[in-house]
Amino acid sequence: MYDEINESVDTFGMPDTVGVATPTIVTERLLAVKKRYPKVDVECHFHNDRGYSLINAVTAVLKGASYIDTSIWGMAERSGITSVTGLLLNLFYEDKSLCQGYNLKLCYPLNVLMGSIIKLQVSPVEPVSITNRTHTAGVHQKAVLNNPYVYEAHNLKNFGVDKKQLFLGPLSGKNLIYYYLREIEYYDLTQEQAAEIAKEFKSQSDVKNKKNKPEAVLKKIVEKYNLPRLLIKKEYLKNRVENLD
Image 1 (cartoon, rainbow, N blue to C red):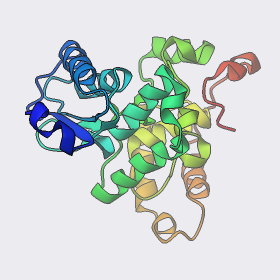
Image 2: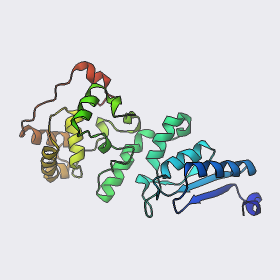
Image 3: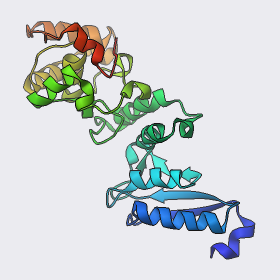
Image 4: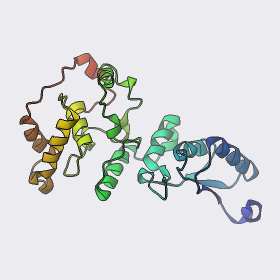
């Protein structure tokens, strides 16, 4: 088929619409196509039925694909397709030049915008989110405070996750509240307390009507709980991956 249309097109499509491709298959087929048709670009489309859409997309780009079909959060039919922000994050760590022309600091705001539209928290399986940075196990918490690289492999500040981009508001769930209070404000609280605070925070008319800054509203609520602060040595603060000041 490609031989018949080769002279009439500038891009070939290689869709994996049923989600059965693997990185090995992607590599073999893409290299074969590029070798046979060196002047034609290749566009790839990967579904996530086997959980391979992201790694297949990264593999395709590294093997010469010019275009990858993506969506916000990877949302699409069945198990979805490649996440646009997940792909950008991984390409950034493979080869920063692959991300030229993209404002990476808008990755997290884009994911939050989607969450605000469909009224859901950004999924913890989305690479660019703060919900996958909430450490609940005691051993994780201690290790992260000592050296965040133990459980946090990359600096999400490059992708818009910092204190200014946490987007506290009426849609903020318990995970976001827990992360903000514990990881940024260094309060010692439980998930149950975070859930109670989040419920009260979301019900505040000041948050919904934007009369006051959400941070100020949250601070007033937290004061009623008399939460202790985490004692973190200054040298540990310097080691944190995300400088959120």
